[in-house]
Length: 178
Image (tube, rainbow, N blue to C red; front, side):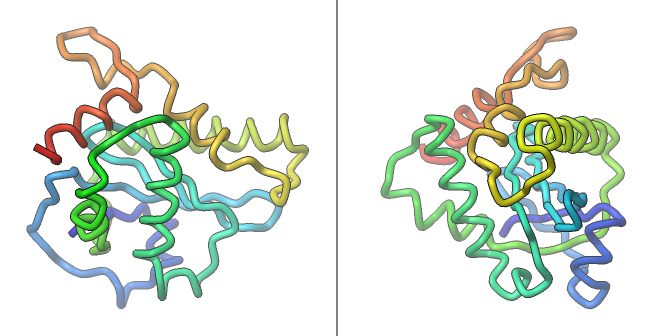
């Protein structure tokens, strides 16, 4: 089960009735979700709190909450493929099961919330500059790859070290698939 911590904005989209209490944790790490608007359409960014790997859902509607698990899993696997992050195919079902969401209220992890805010601002800038706010023409894979290839100081193996979300997600999947 994937714990998805919701920002206050995303909590309004999800609805209070879907927010539950849980103490479970996934071996793939927890996720944090935020919603932002581009061209009057909702976009959701989900960021892993271990690898800071993000997945973007464009033109997200409340109806997508009914099959959020499938939407999230499909987008996650497509993004992994685009970013050339590999894992043994026999683990696909196990990973899909780990992506089954449980929505919780925000966890107040300032590092992750700051990284989500930075990624949100970067995505808005990419969309505005590269696509002139035309959300229908967006190459979601390319846009998301730009964010996942950004070097982050929070991923360093040692103090003041740096790392990439793509590499961190590959390491996380390698550990999970052992």
